[in-house]
Amino acid sequence: MALSLIPVAAALVPDILRLVAADPAGLVAAAAAEAVHQVLGTADPVAARAALAADPGRAAALRARLTEIALQGARLAAETRPVGEGRRGAASLAGLSAGGGTARAARGGASAWGPVTVSTLVVLGFFSVLALLVSINPPAEGGPRFDPQVASVINITVGTLGAAFAAVVNFWIGSSQSSRNKDALVGRLQEVQLQARLQGPPQAPQGAAISADPPAPALSLVSRVAQRPAEDRFDACLDHVLAAEGGFVNNPADPGGATNLGITRRTLSDFRDVEATEADVRALTRAEAREIYRARYWIPMRCAELPPGVDLMVFDFGVNAGPGRSLRLLQGSVGVKADGSIGPITLAAARACRGAELIGRLAAGRMAYYRGLDGFQTFGRGWTRRVEGTRQAALGMSAGGTSAIAMGTGATESLAA
Image (cartoon, rainbow, N blue to C red; front, side, top):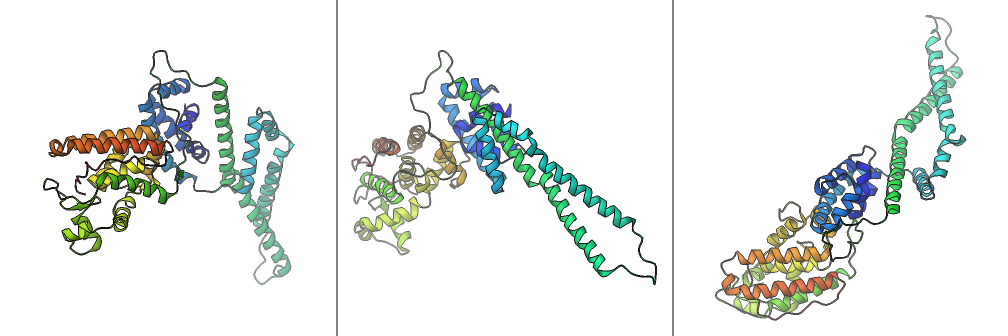
């Protein structure tokens, strides 16, 4: 079952295939196959693909599960493959792509007997010399001793044969054998994938709902590179936040008190490490506000490592309701433990989701939070307008847009960090 379901897992998280090949014990393959079986409820790869096409929600859940498995399995792939093994693996894959006959013939040809012959001679020589040394009687007490030159030759011979014997053992049951097992597993996986491609794309069952979203692009567990430089992305997100926050306000109903450019008096005091006055808040410059946003929100929430659009959703909610709450919403939306501390698992799970779907879940979760607040009757209209404006801007960024959608300044109420 494991091998037949690996291509299904690799379609969602491509790094799974590489990690399976680097795990001769088969732990990653077994875990990935079990995750596919549990989430989709089938061990048939064709039915599994149909289930993915029919239910994007289950596809997102499976993608999050596989991302965690891949991160754990990456530790099993820490050992680097020898250079020669890499070339041999590439040759075997080339043979498989051509039909597999050439590679299999090479493995059964005369060249395959070379390692066997050399290993046999080394083992026989080692044990023969060892038996000879054991059978030689030591010199009698006071009798003539071995010639020093002969003893030296014997020591060199035994040492050389011992080293050769150790190399033989390592070759057959050590790291080289492990690499050969990896090559064989990759070959088998390539055959399964080739069969899947020949069968054509999966067909959704009759009457099943078809997702309007395009298929998710291939994603890497290594950080996905955004189309725009990190500084440009930060400035675009900041422009949106500042447009939403507006200028100086001091609404008695707002628990944040005196606020300018979204920066409360308490936040400014903490940043300057001195007690700020209302006049200091009123005189706050955009340049200083930019540094506060970068130091207290953008960097701690690792927004630069999130996909475009998702970074804006996390950043804007973190500014409005606190970084910890924003990160817990993100983690709950991608299906990982919501501890408010962002790390590689959260980042990888976020990158593995479709951007538009994750942005929609973040917007819905944010609105659910607002509706549970006592101040929703007073500030609900502004919060709703801000969430919708942020969602639209994030969708534009996710689709490759370069400008944030400016909003009115009616939703300037800060909810405290």
